[in-house]
Image 1: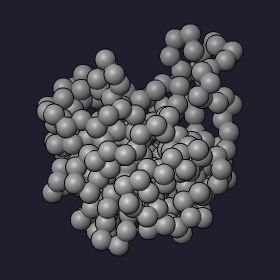
Image 2 (image 1 turned 90 degrees about the vertical axis):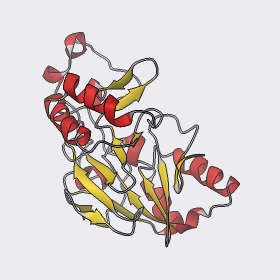
Image 3 (image 1 turned 30 degrees about the vertical axis):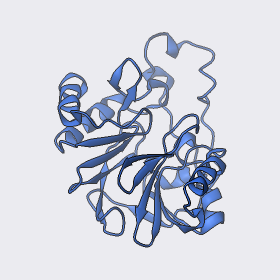
Image 4 (image 1 turned 30 degrees about the horizontal axis):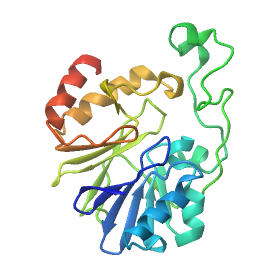
Amino acid sequence: MKEVIPGVYNFTGLGMGRVYLIEDEDGFTLIDVGKFSAPARIVKQMEARGLQADRIRRILITHAHSDHAEGAPVFQALSGAQVMCSAVERPAVEGEVPVPVPKREKLPGLLRLASYVPIWYSYPPKTMRPARVDRELADRETLPEVLGGLQVLFTPGHTPGHLSFWQPERRILFCGDAFMRLPRRGLTLPYPLSTVDMQEARRSIPQLADLEPVVICFGHGDPLMENAAQKLRAFAAKEGR
């Protein structure tokens, strides 16, 4: 468990998908929850730091992929935490519909013809372990109880109802999988195999660059805290639409 900025932490050793912990006045907020195996590791790391996992009050889901949302029912049982996501993602989070995936004809290159895909991705799509969604989040609404006022941003493309989260005073952006930061590659577009509409994902990037964040927290990759706004503007100029 590492501190990103005062009151904001992320966790280590979760495998795929980053999870962020925000320390609020009434308890804790998680942004994403990782796969079904992640909560045990999250709880262990919290306890090692003297933090009580049963004080997790809210879970903000960026999107309905297993590496970001599958651990939600575990925390609901542990602490009664409220799960929040967009209305578009809700049916997938609740296990009522399969996780959205791109059509094969939209996959790049030879992936369209492949008879298999990497082990971390399932085709045909599957449903997730269901979690009860307690609140639907709308574009541009503010959550005053989270980090002194966390704004919800609708950033579709990777999934149809993908959300990012923005704290304007502290200029910290939680971008989920709107884009990623990979070792030796820097900022990149989300994985094609799990991105429903890459063109729409590209269109979501410039609105995030316009925020000029000081800190960017990714769903995949280490937080960016040096020249974040400049690097995101350059990335948006190259890859945004």
